[in-house]
Length: 101
Image 1 (cartoon, rainbow, N blue to C red):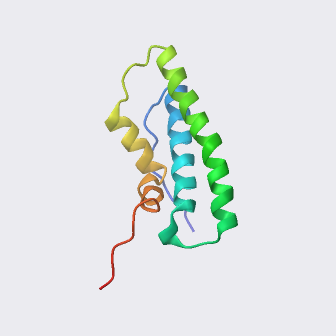
Image 2: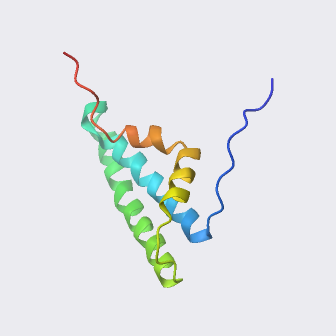
């Protein structure tokens, strides 16, 4: 059986890579808290607690980018990185599920 080939990650600065990782971590926590996806209060509480530290890490990654003179978010490059890292599925857990009639 051949290993799955993943598309290559676009070239990112270390700070951009940290930003993408932190952003996805925050998405994951918000997805775990999202009430329409069910679950229990303890799991949601743990995700909310992790969300606070994840948001701080995201802030720090953006602050580092700013301090290093990275004044622009390169949307197309960052979007490619997010897609390679399964960002669309992870972001989908944050959205409301479609209504069933």
